[in-house]
Amino acid sequence: MLALRDVYRDTTGGTVPKAAAGHLSAASDALSMALLALGGNDHDRGGKIGRAEQARTFLVEAVTSLSRARIYLPKIRTHTLPVLMASDPEPDTELARLHQIATRLLWHNHPYLPARLQAKPLAPEEEAQLAVVFQGLTRHARIDRALRYRWVLLAIALAAVGPVLGFPVLGAAFATCAAALAVWRFARESRPVCGVPV
Image (cartoon, rainbow, N blue to C red; front, side, top):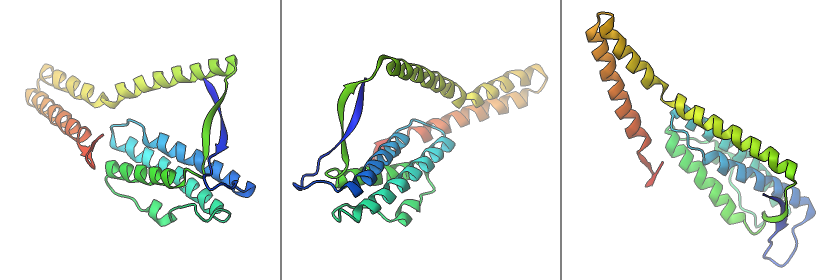
């Protein structure tokens, strides 16, 4: 693994003012974190809404930093806060909208944002710490995948227990509901957003 350092790729021939460098670095970090937040793979509505809120927070921080840096570099392009705070009620559409805003801000301002260059390798103890973090993330991802469909196990259990307890109609109702919910969730998760599959 390699550590990263900031190098500015100002193509105007000049240098980035020191007063703007801190704001540009903060904006670059916030935009990167927003894209990471938007790149998750939650399939439930609550997870998508949470990712959108987190990404919106990072984008507000990025826009604030870009606006401050724009005082020193007028060529920097940014958005107003009402554009970011407006939201779409459909989580998939909102995630696509926020992703478009983040990539547009990166694209328009990339000559002024610090480039991330590979500078030096990580120390062995830092690499070991990073491996432990990744193992923990892998474990949590597996647990999340298992818990995402916990309602299916409950519906199957109720469908199996219903006839045993003398309620065959109740068991059939739970089996029908479980099948309908499974079809509805599958159709909702596989629906494309803006022409791109989720």
